[in-house]
Image (tube, rainbow, N blue to C red; front, top):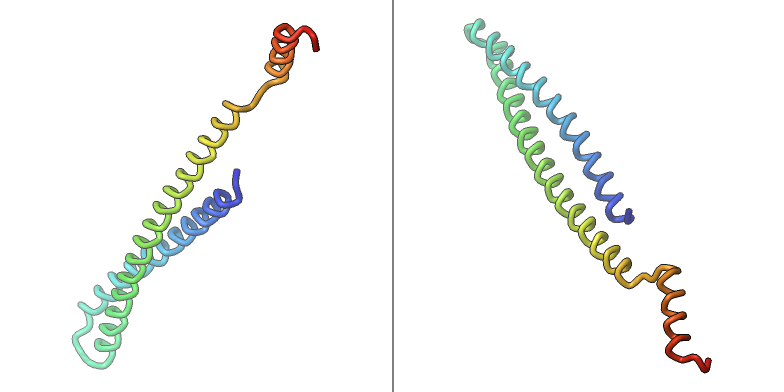
Length: 122
């Protein structure tokens, strides 16, 4: 396995971990926002209501940011996986080419025997 391929695989793993973290944060914020909305419905008005409303808006914004981050990371993973597949395809093509020109010991012995039969004076 080439260095580039290992690097890509490591990057994919890191991004998948990051996605899991982002999803957990996202889930937490969504639950928090729902709880705050429920509390807001129970509070009439005043300073406390405004503070909770502002916090709820911030949480909703953060939720949107996390959603965008998750989508971006998933797209990056797809791109990396495509690059990894391309590297694998290139490696396979190189190996096939090497095998096609590679001679086994038996092939070499046979070719020497054929040469001796064709040129017995040597």
